[in-house]
Length: 194
Image 1 (cartoon, rainbow, N blue to C red):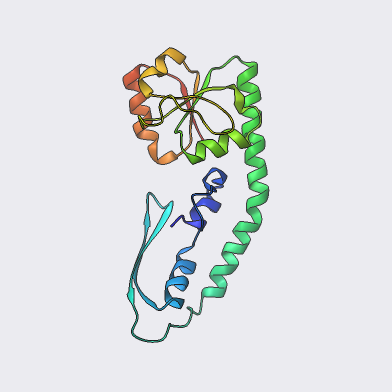
Image 2 (cartoon, one colour; image 1 turned 180 degrees about the horizontal axis):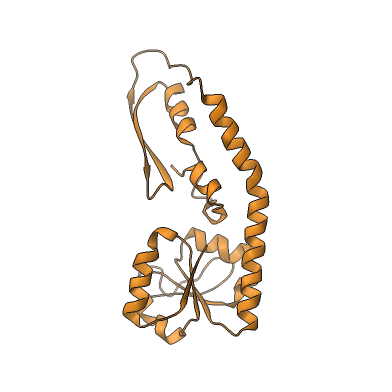
């Protein structure tokens, strides 16, 4: 399940997509399973803490009560969620400012990663229409377009033809892989993470 704490703390507004129906904290995920009659055997972070995993088994007894520290954990989530709105607005403003500056400087911008985060990013940020292409390693996406914003999705191998000045990186866990791919392609663009 998507980790609410990770995405809110990281101000990762691009991850709030329709495919992620529910976000959980470790406490809320354990409470859900416990209240449904399962014993929680273990929990762990997955995908570099962006997701939560849980191992459970059906309980032969009545559901256990919620942990005593549950109210304190809920307070933390409420406080983080309350601050998220302001930080999301600031993030949108930051990206709109970057796109205006890049356009004024005549920079060529591409985005790496043609998934749901990209769709959110390109449709939410004013000025992102200057993005010339979206790069994705998935061959099934090549030749298709980002819903709403319309940028074409291309294979990494065609990136040198675009000669980008800036590559926007939408998920930090792929940074080393993308840097290596860019170096192998001879692309020396600035990499800017969201």
